[in-house]
Image (tube, rainbow, N blue to C red; front, side, top):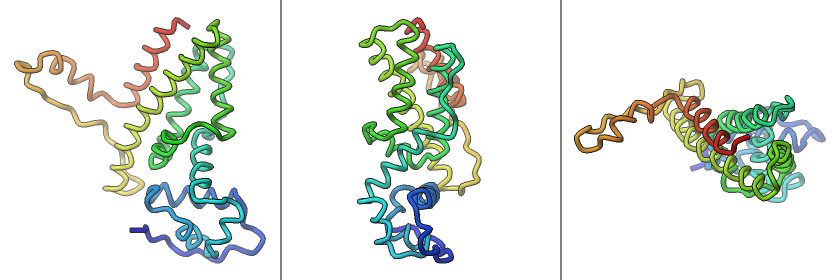
Length: 219
């Protein structure tokens, strides 16, 4: 079922732009998820004929891909501190933060292969950092993929938790850590020993895991 959207004052003729369409589409997706988005919903929110959207985006998928690329870009400049290790930590932390600002779009970013300008810029920047750290090209490519997949996978898990909380409690809800588990130590001794750490705050888990990968890369 399509999520109902409030009707706004009609968008003045000649002011419709890709920027406005993306801003408005992001609002819809942030509130109702990708399932609540359609060209009709976008037209209703802007109080325009939905066919006007197709002058800027050929298809709904093209628009969603542009949204995904915007999430990858984020709002922070790529780090250039002069330390490859510090900049690698920060660039993947930036990506995680941006994904979690728009948790309902995280699955779209994960499913779509990189192809937008922001994706190419972040990829180029990261591989450059790895090469600057002394890695040959094939190792830099493998390291980039490992760091990217770790960040996307971790962020998607967090995003699902965040999106579920928002769906239950509204957009201003406080997101709590993952629920702790209490396995029987007699049956699952190793799991029981590590259980408290598995339920640690997810941002802490992310940074500690990222640190383990970077340490293994010996950068």
